[in-house]
Image 1 (tube, rainbow, N blue to C red):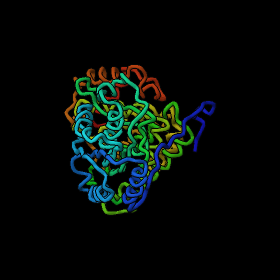
Image 2 (tube, rainbow, N blue to C red):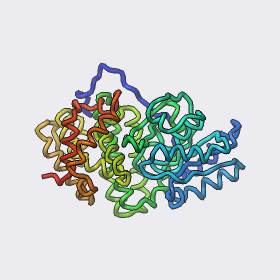
Image 3 (cartoon, rainbow, N blue to C red):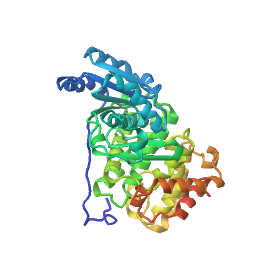
Image 4 (cartoon, helix red, strand yellow):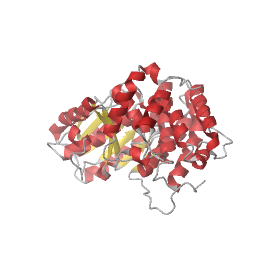
Length: 403
């Protein structure tokens, strides 16, 4: 591991704020978790899910049976959409409030888990709403306890304090992250991920890839996050193709889920920088764009910008995908094209123009992005200065095939 590009004089944060039950069949550990809460006097549960994955995965049959066997009262909100808005959050709070929940269970990928965290905050603060929360007009110090049952190997939301949502009229898709928002307990059961189709398998895993590329190269990266990133990329390189070829390959699912867990811890410690905020604006403009797809379209152009600033770190982290790198800025073009070709080899050939974006959209996207980052967003953690011109360059390059 190369440490020369890290600030070894600074103080870094090492975080992992949740207790995670990991492995096949771990969803059944929910019974012991809920028994623990019941002994503490908790009897009323809010359940937050999307529309289908909680059913398709088989998770709900197990979880509902556990809740009912313990005679806990519950209400279920199943309206979370991909790229959720603050309106989804407010709707969930309104639907779940009548039983005055004492605990929130989130079941799903990043969107349901993120919404469950925000719901847990707002149920603790009657009278507040999603817009005020995501506009940072108030700072929560408390939230209801959250139990996260993760169904994808991409988000890391089950182990971090972040929750992302869009304020639609502002086209502002941003994350919040308060210490009170960590799930107290989480479940990572690879058997619940085998129903992910090829598209979901690819896009969620590429979300993890972007997590660790960014976390290992922010200005607050540590030896710990570089280590996490290096292992994460190794696992993705070894097991992603296997999962795409055979969705039932439980070993591949196990290690991709583990990689996602490591990626969640990495961004919890060292955050992200360029790719995530730029993608958030893409999916704020077009909510139908899958997060992992948008990230991966941007990734080669982001590497073009950051590789010269962190060549030795990225040569180490990316070695399983791009072997033989020496950690020299002169390799930047090779890194960019190799990543572009690696993504294309898995069928990810779309560019922003294929998603309906054009040259005329770029100035507006840049404007909304910079407004969302006012006051110190994650762009400030980039290893290179991020200017309006740099953002425009990345968006414009991502419109068309690279040459």
